[in-house]
Image (cartoon, rainbow, N blue to C red):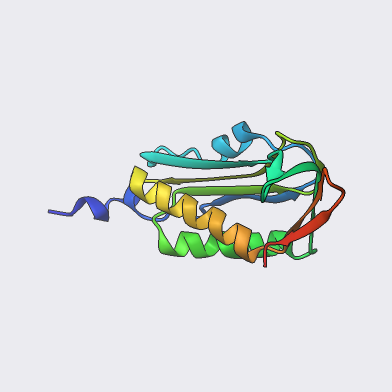
Length: 153
């Protein structure tokens, strides 16, 4: 008798990286959620990063993201690492660049897997690695007139 892990739905899907993008336009949670839909997925984990009105105890007045031309390629590399480590059915990641306002969506990532624990773990790895390895930088201007660059790598 075959184990449940032998079922094709328990394995990584063919071509699970469904959406990778760095955009100057507003991001859509619905688009990312739809991209990771899969009949074999019992769990979908989605993370949405938004622009907050403060950082490090200071009020943020303006924020902009910029990226290296290789950012999408690096995001795909990060996604493929996640796919290699987890039984991902579908994965999507989009990051915004340009000038954003408080409340705007800065990044949306999602992963579907056969089970919820795997989906949570894979999504956490995906967002953490995107933030640490993809060359996207945040420029913040604070209400006191100071500025700060925060880099992903």
